[in-house]
Length: 365
Image 1 (cartoon, one colour):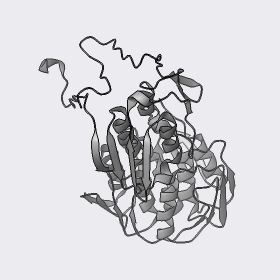
Image 2: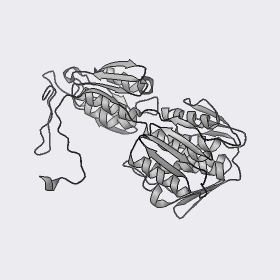
Image 3: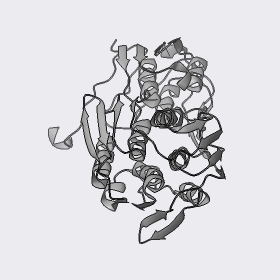
Image 4: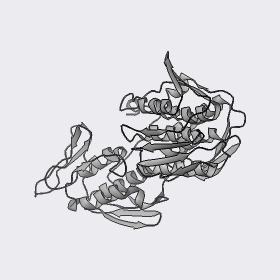
């Protein structure tokens, strides 16, 4: 059997009830943007609760390529941007992680130029950055695409009114970082409202930026001439938190997560309750428990925040596969993933994979 298992790998032996308490990591989708934002101020910024994952290491390489000095240990990262001289992010780094495109706004804001390789995609396929580039042009930048690179330049960006066609998280973040050093006032309408946008705004404000309305669909930025380094703690990862809570619910367990405010998962927790999972909320703790025999079907559509998170769609599909009643559905854009339904006789798992026996609620506890 060992010959059939690739290395390295995880071997998971399931069928057991999960119970206990776990502290969630810092949000990857926030930490990466905070690292990029550190480029806006000369000097050393300190970030706490940074997750130790490959994307963070890749972003560290991007910053070091630009001339920054990065140190990372025990969840704390220091980024010294004093010696940053380069404004070019090479293809071999950007293609490994799409979020590295977020250095574009900070570089053009502080140095007047950014040359960044066009980003790769993820399992959803390549995703365009039109909203980023259109917004930067509205701020007064000249944008040129040439041989797989985007060149953005401006002596100094100028504040303006920007209306996003869609509340893109990445575009909101990039334009927010670009606008903090722009001349005058910038208003971003139809802005993304995700908690990671709020976290980025808090860090920018600690750097000396003037921002109003973060977390709403209209964000106003009053440009300043200079920013200073700061210290900040990354917000907890709501996707990781939701994954742990669903894992507990699927196994008929009792799981508590620490390190995240429940209001950041309000819609998700509402859907858990609708399915029949018991949920208890405290200031920075969320507990979920339940019995799959009593879960009921429920329709869910993924939407931009504060809607149901797309990144929790797959996990929720597993939970819905245990639900009784009419078929439930998970919808993302035009795609629908149907959950299984059961008759009144009970839950009937099946498996189409040879040698794999489906887990049954109540077994192996």
